[in-house]
Image (cartoon, helix red, strand yellow):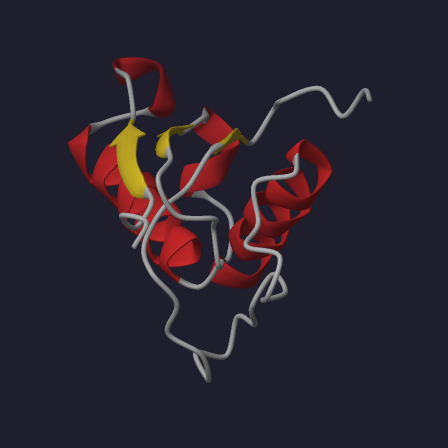
Length: 102
């Protein structure tokens, strides 16, 4: 059996004050929880300043889109939905300002 994906969420002082950093980390953590990442991965989500002022739906969309582009999703599942109807394993890997080149 493969271990579930693990996620680390980082937010530097560039994101803003402590409340902004905490909000950005909460948004990224929750978005990653709704995305079905393939197991056995150690992934890092790095918050950027725009993340703190974003909505959950926008952050979830970015995380799911980047995970799909990077091929990090579990083959049996899709990217999940922001409404919380699914609860896949936690995990995450993306940078909200990552380049989307193939």
